Amino acid sequence: METRQAMNTTEPIIRIRDLVFRRGSRTILDGVDMDIARGRIVAIMGPSGVGKTTVLRLITGQLHPDEGSVEVNGQRVSSLSSRELQTFRRDVGVLLQNGALFTDLTVFENVATPVREHTDLPEPLVRRLVMSKLHSVGLGGTEELMPHQLSGGMARRVALARAVVLDPQIVLYDEPLAGLDPIAVSTISRLMRETNDALGLTSIVVTHDVLQMSRLVDYCYIIAAGRIAGEGRPDDLKRSQDPSVDQFMNGKVDGPIPFHYDPGGPEWSLLQ
Amino acid sequence: MATPVDPPAVLAPISQAGRIGLFLVRMLGSLRPQPSLLLSTLQQVYLVGARSLVIIMICGFFVGMVLALQAINALEQFGASDQVSLLVGKSLFRELGPVLTALLFAGRAGTSVAAEIGLMRATSQIDAMELMAIDPVQRIALPRFLAGAVSVPLLTAMFNALAILGAVVFSIGVMGLDAGIFWSKLQNGVYFQEDFIGGIWKSLVFGGLVSLVAVYFGFHAKPTGAGVGTATTNTVVLSSVLILVFDFIMTSFFT
Ligand SMILES: Nc1ncnc2c1ncn2[C@@H]1O[C@H](COP(=O)(O)OP(=O)(O)O)[C@@H](O)[C@H]1O
Ligand SMILES: [Mg+2]
Image 1 (tube, rainbow over the protein chains, first blue to last red):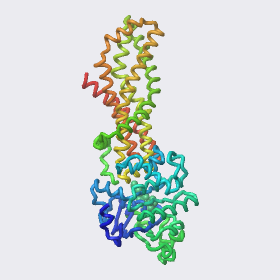
Image 2: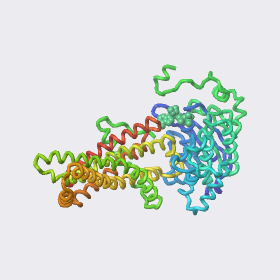
Image 3: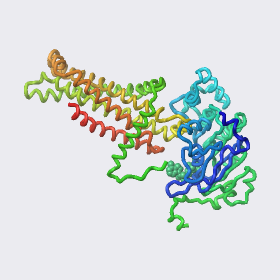
Image 4: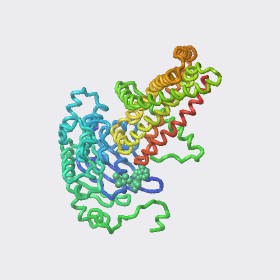
């Protein structure tokens, strides 16, 4: 908590420099730079399999960069000790692809899990906190349901409540809108904006869904072929002359983003 | 996570054993005597133990009957069929009870634990826990491991009881042996400490082995449907082998 006052508010909360990440002989990320400003909702976009989830996992410290650095609040994530990493993760809420609710716990217990684990609040306070978060995502009254009784959109909202229940500084969303119906899509994106602004968070949204995201986010990074192909406000990016950015933003088949999987290694380059 | 260089194939079982051992160490290292651990362990004892009870009891009863049948067949040739309870009791308490119970437990409970944890892996629930700074080994693996180690001895005692009942039904009810002789031979020839408790100790080890293997394979399942299937199969295969190997080792050392 002391860090919250001590930090310089104009500094980016997340700073990524020359990030290189490899899996075997394949280079997934090849020199990525990002500066994520405090209080913003920032999208990381790009075609499937390009390494968006990988970027999130590098930010949370689940993966370590091969080169370069990821700094959050000026701290290098990859050099945190495992104890520091535990503290760090309490300050980062994550909404994983499909929500990842605990299937053996009720909605209430799902949201209460981080609270019980990381605070010593007495039961009535836990209850109040959890219920207020459930109300804020419009799901008061569902607390006794099991996850399999929820629709996809409701499950995503519960996961959102769980991600922000400890009032983190940063929330990371992995494909929060994938596979939802149009109404759920608008509900979730509205909630993401409300949560971000009400709690003073910084949000990073990983997605390949250009349309919805360009309405929601403040700033975009587009990853193609392991690098940042373009960055800027969504409207500016749509008018970009860069062929990769244009191809992705406007959903064109032809362009520099390849249709084929690149297995890495010298054989592939010879074929090209 | 990059895996270290793969060892040559002959060494694979050894490195596997090493990884399972390390997992055990990591799991026991996360043990904190907290009320929540007791609670979740009890819950698992119900889920894996109590739910295996019916199958264990049915199998125990029939094993008791067939043991009595074979024993009477063999003993009749020497006119010693009144020794049947002695033979049944010894072989049951020392070997068949613990081993068969553990094998049944591996099939009934080990598989469901491996599949459950594998599915948690496949649906990113384990990931989500790590991201909440909750240790999934402590939260998920440890209570299931402890529950297995607690349940199998209890189930073995139940198996033994039902098997004796099966032997009684067959030898006294069907073959018309004398009930007094049956019980007195059992009381005098089969020892509580040596035979019964010795078998229960074995079953404690078997229960630990089965649940260790199950949580290990569940935890390391590939996050796909096929991965979960492989994890359950591996659980049954490896824990069955380990039960029989450890049975021999323990028997040869402690008798
Ligand atoms: N555990 C893994 N092992 C090997 N390769 C992986 C693993 N996870 C992801 N990859 C590869 O890394 C690349 C980037 O994956 P990911 O970051 O999940 O993509 P995205 O989220 O953009 O769809 C993909 O090509 C994928 O095949
Ligand atoms: Mg992804």
